[in-house]
Amino acid sequence: SQQGEEDPQALSIQEGENATMNCSYKTSINNLQWYRQNSGRGLVHLILIRSNEREKHSGRLRVTLDTSKKSSSLLITASRAADTASYFCAPPSYGKLTFGQGTILTVHP
Amino acid sequence: SQTIHQWPATLVQPVGSPLSLECTVEGTSNPNLYWYRQAAGRGLQLLFYSVGIGQISSEVPQNLSASRPQDRQFILSSKKLLLSDSGFYLCAWSLGSTNEQFFGPGTRLTVL
Image (cartoon, rainbow over all chains, first blue to last red; front, side, top):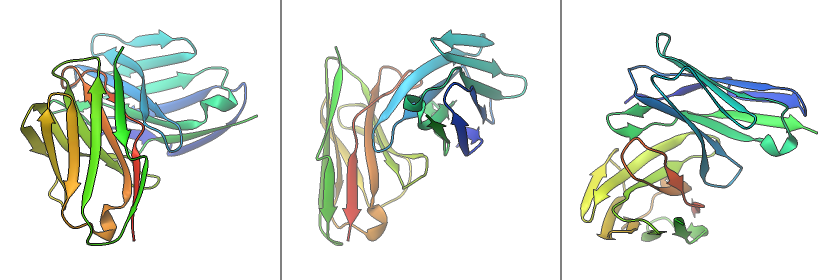
């Protein structure tokens, strides 16, 4: 089944810098979601972007979707140490969400 | 507001012992329910999902089973645990199959 693939696998930045994570998927979708997971916790939904949207904002988050390239990106601006977490994209496949391996983001204070 | 509960939070079990993990949802009706497993440092693997009472779909063949005895209760079970069953088990719910999912706090299972 389809799976979102995040890139890079790990990202280490300084507080205040921007963090960009990418996601590629294989087949046509009607929406794509991004989730965050703090260590040892459940996932938390961040944002959903629909196939007819190219960009969406939520606070310091900016998500883009390029359906022609089957890719999405998540930008976190002015990162904080509290943003340290794993980030997953979740494209749907056969009526279910699929999760990749995620990007581990570490923000150093 | 909706909440989702999972218990226990942590569990250490010997190989060959049975397993029962419970997940309950409050504040919504007719949710889709999901069980995921996450190995250390890995992504989520969908194990089971349910669109209604008594309706269970299995995603991968394995040593586990799931049941949904009530609308907002989802149970993950095993008759005999294997070492490979160790992992972090997450329950989630959604309204609609490709809508936002809400996750529980998870159960850390260690099989020794």
